[in-house]
Image 1 (cartoon, rainbow, N blue to C red):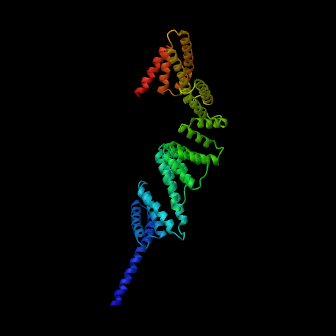
Image 2 (cartoon, rainbow, N blue to C red):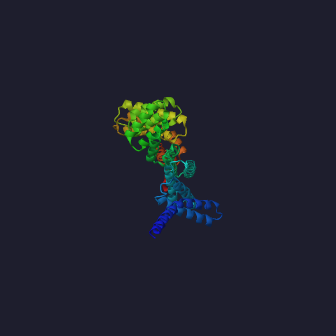
Image 3 (cartoon, rainbow, N blue to C red):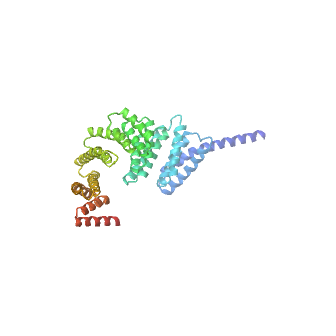
Length: 402
């Protein structure tokens, strides 16, 4: 009797182990029935059964370290995700983690090829979501979808640099320069080594006001790619962002020598000269030279791009400011300095005449810019052109009511 009892206990134990290991096979069988089912109800029933069996197998010590268990679990949860209408992120995440464990536990590489096929399927689906969001100008959502697509390669212990760089484009559009930085650092660590990476990373650090890292990465990039124009521009932007005007000017001149059709470079040079002119602590001679250089630079920008609003506006405002300074001097002369007053007033009027066509050009390019319209109104008032001043005032009022 004792021997019989011992036999029954052993039989029961073996049956228990078999019943646990059989869950993986049962999940597989249910998955096969799911693919064969002809109607939605039967498909749902078989998928639910497959889920139950594979969940049990995933937590049982006998099957919890089996590559086959998690390979099936990945497929089942991927189908559950599809059945949910691709709305349940939890199901999708479970599928990803299951394939990751399958790759880890599948030491004999029985499922390597099938895992790779499913990884690419998941990656492509997320990539397509990112593209769809990008086309809708939903750049934050696009960025996150691309980021998720890139992490899928974690399953096979690889870095998806191509998708990360695509995510970087969306992140730039979204203004998420923290993400631009993070994506490029991952690519750099993974062995990506191009001028574009250093340029984009340098710009990201600059936008994030991280001067030390911006300087370090741009210097490294310039050392590796000394003739790369984009890196020279990144270095220029760095100096401009942190107020190092002299260094910025040197870089702008360097760019202007090679990129002669880049109107934004000449505009940036003009803006720096403009800044020097408006600095009253500078000597009269320095300011005079800066004024001439600023006007020449803006002219070059407009010659390349006649419809460049910023250059036309700045040109007009610069002449307007010169006129204002001359009028200020004239109005502060002694009452008996009539000759000097007339001379200064004449020079001021001449500069207003020079300002007018540029501001009118700016207003034609961007008719809704209130700053431009206000400057025009003031000039028309000074020139006693009441009808034009009234028209400007009406346009300004209409825009302010919107």
